[in-house]
Amino acid sequence: MSAPFFDKHQDTLASAIAACESREYWSPFVESPSARLHPEGAPEAGRAAFEAMLGRPFELELPGETGRTGAEVSPYTQQPLGISYPKCDVAALYESATKAMAEWKSVPWQERAGLCLEMAFELEKQAFANAHATMHTAGQSFLMAFSGSGANALDRGVEAVAYAAKALGEVKPTARWSKPFGRAGEVTLSKTYRTVPRGVAAVVCCATFPLWNAYPALFANLVTANPAILKPHPNGILPVAMAVRVCREVLTRAGFDPNLVLMAADTADEPITVELLQHPACAIVDYTGSQRFGHWIEENCRHTQVFTETAGCNGVVVESTDNLDGLLNGLANGLCGFSAQMCTSPQNVHVPAAGIGSDQGHLSFEDFSDRLISAIESRTEDPLHASRLCAAIQADQSLRVLESVTEGVKQAGGEVGLESRRYEHPDFPDARTATPLVCLVTPDQRELYQEEHFAPVTFLIREPDAETALEHAADNARRFGAISSYAYSADPEFLAQAQEAFADAGASLWCNMTAPMPINFAAAYSDYHVTGLNPAGNACLTDLAFVADRFRIIQFREPVKPAVA
Image 1 (cartoon, helix red, strand yellow):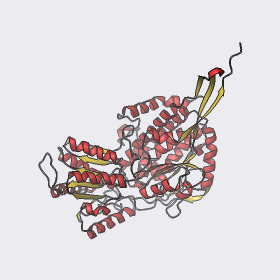
Image 2: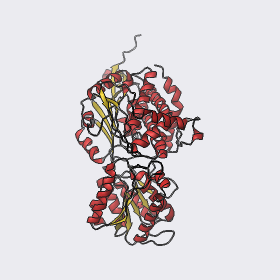
Image 3: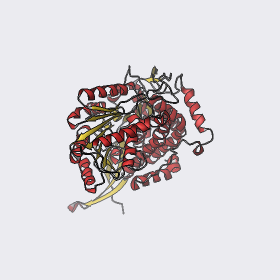
Image 4: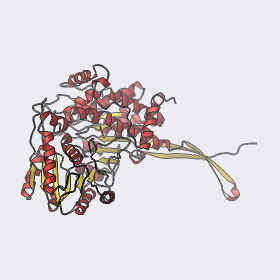
């Protein structure tokens, strides 16, 4: 069978595989929305395309449509988007996907990979429209929506294609096997190996980053021959629907059944997630979201192959530093960034009660707290700066979290070092916003901070000493989960101890992140996102394990008859 899409994109695939092996920076996509990097008029056309979708039915033909659904509200305007989507019968979706898989699994994996890369480049063409759609559903700033849900998300998707290609490429299609069997003489067998997909996958997308985890799951499934039904968050349907439409168009143009990529939309009042995941035809679940529901899936969907990426109470251990300004700048940016609505956002900052050493002299615990709070305040006092860094709060629930944590800290005898407040967004006066809440607590108030609070909440924990701070932070990661942990120390021996402690806890550790970049940035082709060794998730973006168990290997063998003289 010819493979025109593999031929078209084989250089990109080779570069992606090389990047995974070298772990160096590489991307085939444009990360910046700067107009000079894009075709003339692209930013304006993207905004117009987004606005044209508001207040009307979204055009997407799906099997089993029984009506319309959708009730998205913009975190920036707090007004309904007014878009309706196909409401589909779950059984009909699975039936259509299963039918589509029959032909798809016979397509060489090289061509499946090529088609996924074709999808990725087609998806990039709607980067500006997608950025506006992500802004007004997830609450991200425009810049983050353009990069984090555009180029960076596509990078993660292509990374999954690369690993799927590596895994499938390891399976030799045929072999000739010979072995002597005593007096019977030598026996020769002809063996054929076939990769077989597990079946239809359900991809549950999260609210705040609707595509960053969706693309890896989607492409990992498609390259390994599994159809995918994408289940968007009820307030994050539009970016997913736009992506599904593009993928279906690519499949149709290539002559394949578009039902290899489907969408199951719903509302918070009429959810369908449990029905979707517990359907007998569901073979794979990819889930990104809350830890509580992720654990429920792991326990109650044992008939499927489950991949989860949930959350954790990411810790920071501060022992000492030789770059205090860099530490404070990076940490303050991390605590403010997207109002800490990222799975990599730091939350618990463990500091010795006696303070820390630094290149600017010794700082007491109070000195360090004051400096960090001042750095946060300087980033939120100017509404324009705050809008670019903090963006908007995705859901009202996060505001309730801020209220409950504030009250809980006060009742437990802790101290609120910095109250959270609403800031006035310069472009969207009705935007749902909140600045970080900073609480000063002690280790015996652990019940306040031993789980993720999905809101801009920071706990400064007064620890007896640096060794205890490290012990507590690593233990939190082991027991309650962590995706990104952080340690600051000018002492190489302490830093080595920290690496061992977090490795034993099954958690990755970023050390002395004082470089001028987001400390919680996760780079495709280089960073392994989630370890699968602590309660923050059982899967990693991206490694061979993320793709290799989406297919199994069937073999056929038969004796080779001796040649007739």
